[in-house]
Length: 196
Image (tube, rainbow, N blue to C red; front, side, top):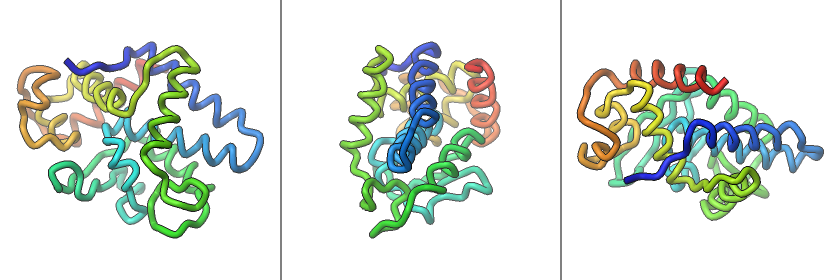
């Protein structure tokens, strides 16, 4: 069965990322902390795969409509991802200090597209700081588990995660159905409210 973080563990990791942003003393330190925080929220609340975070382009973001497009994700399929207000705020904060780079990737590190190994390591280190085992895929499993527990339908979760086969998503529960966007926004509002 997939491993996921408990609500208490998510809070500890989230609070660590928030603390690092608030305690950053230098511009570069703040930019890196904002990058890490935005990547964390994309994997936790939007269920993005590590490679999808790495490959995300500026043109794929539609923050006004609270969504993004994952292009050529696993199985070479595009899909829409809905964003909470929290994700939008973390992306806007990062983009405000992102700087210029050689590519149009959303996430840059030292003016180059960020590599997934760096994101993976930063998630791991955040977990170590608060005593929680964190990996990008565990954050993705946490997203699916929390959405399901908050009442999101399994078919909506399947579409959000980009699973080709429902059986892959059925690891989390039995089959349900309802429009993806309605389920997602309702469930994520409950999750955010329960973590306040």
